[in-house]
Image 1 (cartoon, helix red, strand yellow):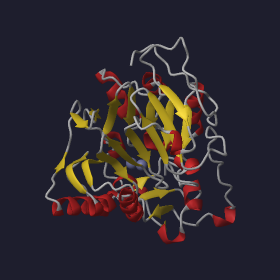
Image 2: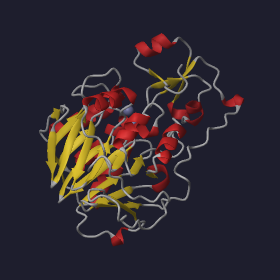
Image 3: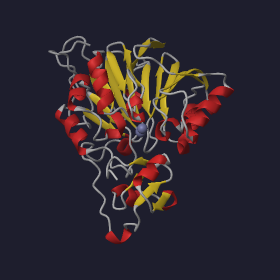
Length: 366
Ligand SMILES: [Zn+2]
Ligand SMILES: [Zn+2]
């Protein structure tokens, strides 16, 4: 794709068809939004399934009969991933990628490993505490597959598509910023998967000078305010963006700042919390977007902040989410949304919590 080319994309996501512009350069891809898969041409032999896993990420990519997965949602989505592969008759995954060892990305991959055989497995680390990682490793060992840490610049074939690992380039401090970032090129169309990369990892990718311009962007870290810098979005210049996030998630994802940037760039936006599963087909020139549910709400509007009744604010120093391992100030919005079984009201200081392996919430900064 040349730098100056831009796809002729309608800004109204309900638009059925975008006529190719006569001025558009040859290399620009075209986007067609179809709510039914019936009109997708047979030549569209590349497809990405952004699977709705609630709060988390999961993508299945199939090209010329070969398949790979990038993340699989949280542990409680293992059965969903198992059934999804079964329904689509994906019995072999050429590659399985856990972008980083957080449960909302890696947990559900157990379901994939229980259904399909895997040829190669990648993760940003080959050691990590936690149940999700242990299961991932356990099921891979059963298949005699070792976890590989891919280096930036690695390319892998998937059918006639080319998969390139862009990052991590250097080891950064925080697990999200060591996410494996992958770009896939199929014909004249390209797709960027950013895991939970935030500003610092985006910065290392920009500095590296690698090609990141992509027609489809899986928006970083579920639309977090600490991801998708304007420089990064400008360089990727997507025509279609997908945000994978859960309805009423604890974090208030996606954030308005990110949504505004995408809207300003005239990006066609799809969100798993509004659309369910989102399938994007490519024939090498044209993208066909097929969401499970048509958009009824404006995707560029962030979920409203929760109104918290002061009587519901726990009377303690911090509130720990036993499931995510994050701790919060008692008046944080996440506490109001947290299920009672995950809630641990803690009396003590923050240093002790950090020493015990809990992480401070990035929203309330306890
Ligand atoms: Zn995540
Ligand atoms: Zn993460």
